[in-house]
Amino acid sequence: MSAKLNEVRQMVLTSVRNLVDAPAFKDWFQTQRANHGDIIVINNSFIYRKPLIKTSKNSQYLCLKVKDTEPDAADVLVGQPGDLNSDFKLFSARSSNLPPREALDQALLAEMKRLGRLVFVLIGELQDLPSTVPVNHKSVKKLKFDPSAGSQDVVADADGSKTIIVDQLTDPESAWNAIKPKLEQETGDDLSSLEVAFGAAFERLQDEARLRLILPSPTASKTTTSFIARLRASVCKQRKLYEEALGEWTRGGQGADGHLREMMRIAYNFADDAIKVLKLLVSVADLKAVLLWCTIKEHFDVAEAFRNLPWKKSHKKPSLELYREIISGARNRAFHNLLAFDRTIEADLGGVDVKARRLTLLPAHGRRKSTVAFDYEDREMVEILTELTRAPEVAVPFDFWKKNADVMESFEKLLASTEDALWALNRARG
Image (cartoon, rainbow, N blue to C red):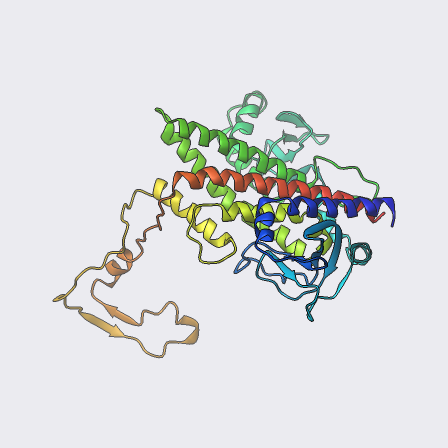
């Protein structure tokens, strides 16, 4: 085995050893009657997958031998025991249905051959690309995004026309205000029409601007501008803001409500976006078993963080869908107070006569959705009333928000370990 592949092997062994040292594993193992030679199978998915995860679980599972009466984290195998529902399962050495197994070294060699290159998109380097769109105005003909410009500017082109240069794509108003004084000097009073043209061009620039992603070569060095590094940096920033808002809200005081709203805003965005990324990480782990083996402890920790939330669970495994519903419901309770109803309303219309107008049967197939099948007096008012809905509201205890910080931290660590594993695998394929 090459030195670079041995780095991957050590990463797997370290992750398995850390998992075996985890309190949850130790608690489980104490309930088992393990004997020398028994086999422990570690599940390869800990999150409740339905309905969000579309890929199938990988058929390969990490396995440990029991040495004397303790799990031997230094003797890791790869087996195919069939599907598992529990995090860990013990097979007796005397069992007739021991799963087929192979040495970790042999499994790693096979995995590297089928690893492919596409997975390294996750550590591909992101590079800014300049982009230019036309401006529909007689004074300025082009709007250019140049991230290296450092400021907004107006330049004259060789043909005598003008180009507006911006260095960001998020705030058209600040960009306009920065170049407005210079445009006043060069274009005179015709600024109102130019502002409209600039706004339209800026929207088009936002749509057309691109980042280039460069797949890493086997000799490439780890960079902070990779796709997954940018994701991790964003999660880290939001986690710190969440913990700060949580701390301020816990201390109470005059601004406590504002800190609670900020905390819920971050939690809501995290619940939506982080679940998308977690779906990606779980799916990639399904497809590329070696990536899961290198990060098995962090995958388990994310699941444990979800489990430790104080919620009523309908499944043994943490449900990502339920997590999102709880966060969304709590946010609705805090922010959606315009229609402050906690139940559906049923009006008693006994004695109200419905004055029928017409019943339409057998409409043309293409018009069936636009045809009113049963028309009656005041139908339009009924339709307007029934458009009103209420948002589901959930009261969430303080402990949920506190432990949600652990969810965010464990997710950040999973991103970091996945990033490290991908760089190690990238080096090993060289």
